[in-house]
Length: 205
Image (tube, rainbow, N blue to C red; front, side):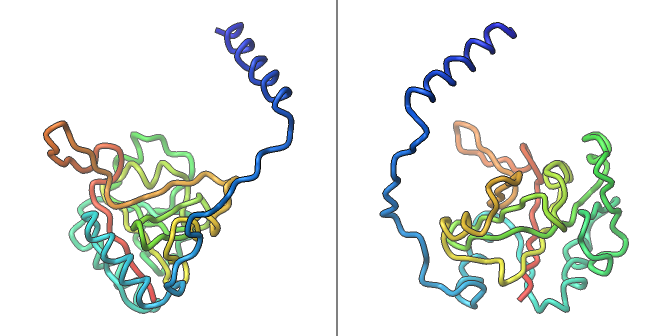
């Protein structure tokens, strides 16, 4: 196996040397910005519509109401709630801060997780996490059955190029478009196969 790996890597290095270090120019003729103002009422409405279309729930209100909105999102949860490192205590004081060490079987004991996000795209209803403050490691947003994600208005842009421009490509990125879902050949939708079965977005203006 090691010999095969070495041979493959050697071929890649040889091909790269032949191609040279100069990359071809990319002609970006696609739409790179939208017409909706970042964090404005129209872009927030678009994001909300897309999220609901993807079977996510949306609770919105002013920033000072975030603790109440989070509590409402967790009102029917039975079991412990995990809180990503950096999520303020007053957002949900009963949440257990993630220690960064728990194995998947331990994370599976939590009924829900609370995180913030790095940015969101209204046009596709996509929320991006980059393991930064308030987001934590990727595993905590994938294993608990319910993900409560706090999105602040000024993090919401209209288009995918704007979303990517707001992110650091060197960080571990996770893109979320509604609850985890898949379907079989007969198009029967099943949620929660590859991640949380439920997604609640707290949209803070």
